[in-house]
Image 1 (cartoon, one colour):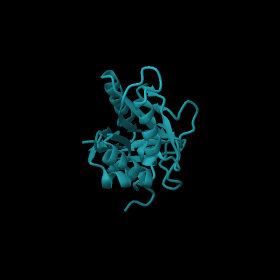
Image 2: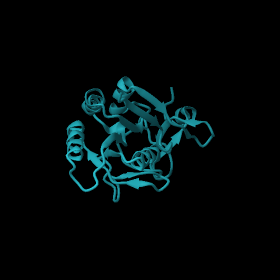
Image 3: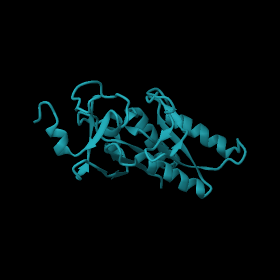
Image 4: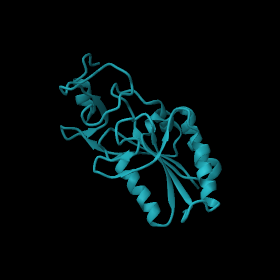
Length: 203
């Protein structure tokens, strides 16, 4: 029976690399996957799924108004009808940057598993630079069949669970919009101890 999975972690934990490895494993066995990532990342050469170890793959992009379930079912119907030379059966849906999903989109993915028996595996951040849950992550934490925390490492050697936003000088940023696109130049994965000690007003 298909399930909805959520792999979550701070940045630099290898989420995208694991997603692409999973896609490879399916395809190596003659099955195909539907890859999705957030359209919010508009940096040059991005919008595809990119891992920090150099793996990359093109993917469908979702915005806040994308009906992912409808698109996936259309894709599966086309494969079942034999559209496209050498089309393989759709075996799984893989979603990168799942923190940017809306509540409705998470429930769409749940319906794909419950009604159409399509496994869905989501990968994303749990919290933002303020330590607050992203909307998509909050719903996934609430309804996913299986939750798996991946491990990143803080500069002190402890498990990194927080995403710290930094400015050009590398100093922590404690205010601003929840979503601000950037990589290692804008975010650092740290443990809770160092996340709190770097806040302007720790509690």
